[in-house]
Amino acid sequence: MAFLTCLLVMIFISPDSKSLGNKEKTKPYSIKRILSNRIILGIFVMRFFAASGQGAVYTFLPILAMQLGLSSTQVGIVLTMNIFLIAFLQRPCGRLADRINPKYLVITGTFASGMTVFGMQLVDGFMLILGLNILMGIANGISLPGGLVITGRMGRTMGMASIMSLNDAAWSLGMIVSPILSGMILDVLGISYVFIIGSLLILIGGIVVTIFLWNYEHNINFVTESVFDLIKK
Image 1 (cartoon, one colour):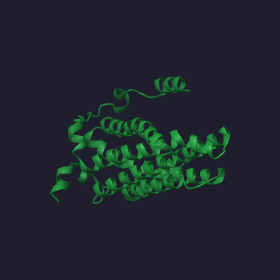
Image 2 (cartoon, helix red, strand yellow; image 1 turned 30 degrees about the vertical axis):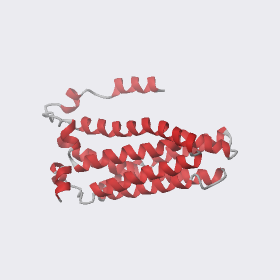
Image 3 (cartoon, rainbow, N blue to C red; image 1 turned 90 degrees about the vertical axis):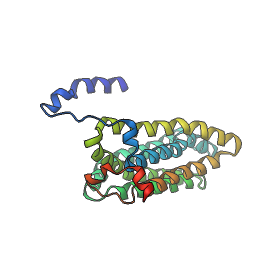
Image 4 (cartoon, rainbow, N blue to C red; image 1 turned 45 degrees about the vertical axis):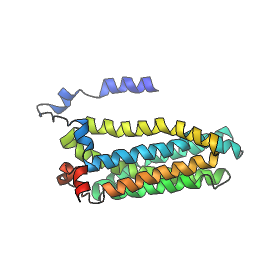
């Protein structure tokens, strides 16, 4: 499937020289300059903590589910519904993020995701775990488009590929940390604490993004305001 996707991209995605035409290319900002922007830094930190917490679900939920007597098929259904709802909600929530301030979607979705992860170690049975994963999928489906809209706006001046790659890097770093941290927690404290601490990590990301996006308005004027300006305030 990955190889097929690669072939489709090579065939159907046009190169920059063809898609941009005679338009002048924007010179991308340096990584240091991009991360000095408080809005981008807030999104970056939030995605790192969100991935660190959510990775516990994707990695260790099967262990919890097996302890509760769920079958492998039921575990697959639970995880599939989570991911399916994230994908399904991208278009409607993306349209909503274009009409209202997207920071509200990011903040609401992040906190909601943290609360659903916390609840996973409290429930028992297939339907309850499925219900929490449906809620988690909805929460992530709400927050993701909002973050993409914000970073997309910033990318117009800072360099779209540079910002999107940092966005993905933050998520990847969280996914790297999550299995190791969660495994240590499982060995020392038990499976329940994997979800408790995972929830706390997501909520920390929610607090950070709320602080850094508090004064964000959906216009280009905030692109130049850095994290140092926030500290001065």
